[in-house]
Amino acid sequence: MELRHPALIELLQRAYSAERAAALAYVGHARSLRDPVVIAAVQRIEQDEWDHRRNVLVLMQRYGVPISGFYEFKFRVIGTLIGLACHVIGRFMPFFFAGRLESGNVCEYFVMMRHFHSLGIHDHDAVLYEMGLKEKEHEIYFLDQVRDSRWLPFFEWLFSWGAQASANDVNLQSPRLLGESHQYCKARTEGDQNIRRD
Image (cartoon, rainbow, N blue to C red; front, side, top):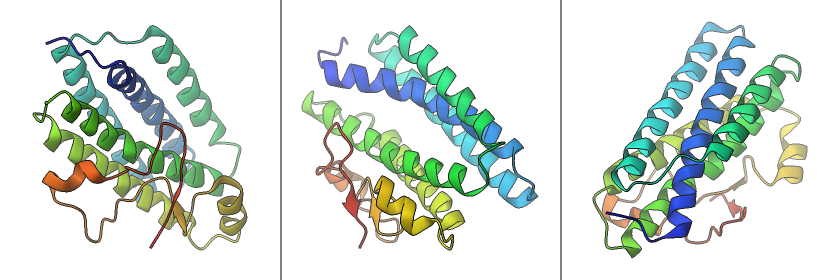
């Protein structure tokens, strides 16, 4: 089946390549750390990103969506540079910006789900739901790493993400059921629209 939905095609292509950027960034991030427990946690998150990339590729192959050479190049460079930067920008910023990035990634999969629904396709709800919630877990982990930092209030004000603001409305304490999860991120447009945390 060919997808006749330009926004969904573009989102699949971007998500596929952006997951690689995140994974490469976490390779550098883990290598910049000293605590074995934290290193292992970041490496687990890196593996999740590779898993998500494989899952998105399955969807792309099913519907004949080509890989974007432009996105592959762009996000590979971005991920590599971020990974290298983690060695020189201290501890706070890699965790903060990883959390902010993951916060936005959550909505990619729920928006993707709604796009599929608009075509009458519900086959992928479970995998998109799982990936969206997993990205939320990543966001919370990175936030917990900087929650007590004296820098957080300033960075939260500057970048609209932190203890009081998120780019999604997913609450892991009481997540929506799978059948209702397409309602997540309805307030989120294609740009960044942050949501206050409860």
